[in-house]
Image: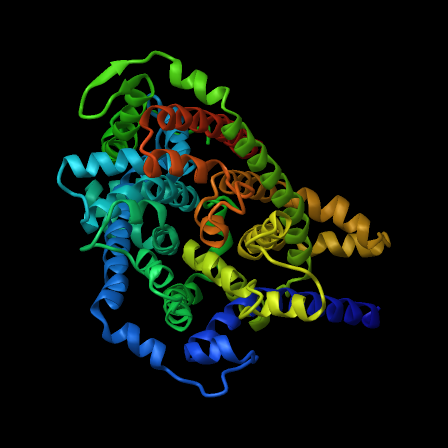
Length: 273
Length: 289
């Protein structure tokens, strides 16, 4: 019996090793390229850099037109996360605790926005934000990304809130807490992990999106994803810098992922596992 | 679920979300509706065009071809990613350091900006400087995703499998975690085969998350834009021009507002229909538990 279990374990380890290898190889290749000079990339084919250099990273981190891309992306991603969570918290509470006129329809309507193709909204967003003078600002992108992040945050938070027994609310009211005080002092700490997960997902989907953020910006709020396309149009391809810029966009995700590793699946299931 | 008190003042709590989403979804959508029934000869003069654009879109060979490619693409993606995701989930370590290790590495592709995903595979598949393209060439396989439609398709499909299979696996893994050990012990006493354990214990427990996985993957692959756009730009020819790529070309590239708007509305209605199925299935599932 033990031998069978062990051989199954070994088989699983092989499967996982192969799968993780498949996932990591393309990323490794980008990392490999980012540490080479363009001459080495185009001249010699090697599995690791012969003369590792950080010159590509230096190019990005010393040129404002490059590193401002990261700053811009960070600004609108954080703005979007804060806005999304702030408006989603009370709404999720309402959905998880009460029934009210049209609640089911409203919930469904929110979901449809998560499913809306960004391509449909690109042009109308461009016109809307141009006409109110917000084109090429961080807040425009942050608001545009609310289209899919607010519904997502409401859904995830509602899932977590439904796991908190209602007796807690009632006890707090009997103890004389007002609603806002109860919500901030008692309820929010109870669903802290849910808030963390919802924030993580807002961060993530705002960070990876390109179509809307590129359409709504030109210079001042240009995201890193759009900045990267300029290596393509330059005379000859600057592969090394492109690879380094790509690696730098992976780092923020890799850092935050560790903190929510046990909740990732629950978040993707919209809080319903 | 049933004993929630009725309280219409809860609307006040929902109001901020309502206003925000109305601003960022309803308002733009009204613009689209507006354009879809009008024509313009430049400037700011518009004429009533009725359903002309809808007629044009529905009968357009170009859009029909894009829709065909889109459906084929989504079908292939589901046929590969769902079984593979289940298979990976079944082989993941149950707990401890290695479980966390696998979770973090698997989630990594999900957090990479979509254009960078495109860039990674654009580079990886190149015959001159990419590991994949170079290796295939060394093996004597004629592979070139820039000129060959089949190679372009294979590259984009492998890229999507690389990008999103982990999502299916993570969801299934969460479903598997909820199975009590007692079930497996009972199966062992009954000397159930590996297949039967999967078919009668694991699969039913994964049903809920699996539905979410199927629908999320279907919808997201149906709207795919950035990744194939970066890798192939919709080419060679129109071989990898999916619905979103076609739409953005029409709307922002050529500024053909009328057809683009009509196209958008039809596209959105399809998504709405699928969302409705999704919602019905999910809420029904909740009621059953």
